[in-house]
Length: 208
Image 1 (tube, rainbow, N blue to C red):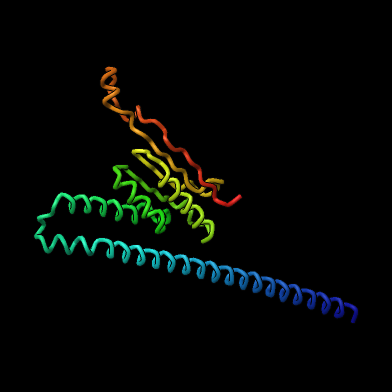
Image 2 (image 1 turned 30 degrees about the vertical axis):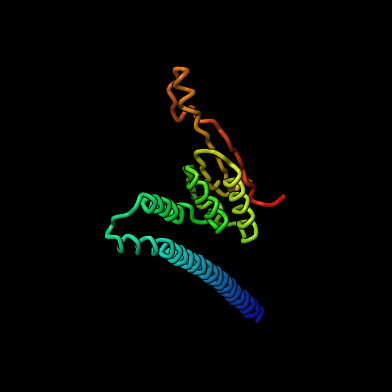
């Protein structure tokens, strides 16, 4: 009887161990499934956001181009010098929508167009460094960028996002071309290396 009791106890211990292991495995599997479901949901949300952004930018670009395309059609491509200039501005604005992405809001668009109309070359490069900013921080960064473009008299302006992990969201560089007439009079041949830095700005990711 004692032997049977020992064997029975050992059997129950073994059964309990098997059940405990099975329950633990089921719990781990459930946790993994829940995590996978959350990741899939997050991925789906990100993809929907990208699709929405692409649709918005496509619609905005179409809206910008429609009037000029109609003028080109009506004139059979025989545009005035002023209309050709507007086409160049429009081309730059469309390029901004593609390369600038989140570096654009209405204020930035207006200031970039204003800078181009006074003869400046403006380049916006969003390489994904500000994708994680919340709406308030993003709007603050973009409004500061708009002010910087408005205030500078540089001939070339380059705004570029900074990779995540930095305290800086966007860097803005403005270059002013040295007067070539003055340089020529001195016997100096002007080049890109002769550009003077008119603006250097680092816009922080967070207010403070």
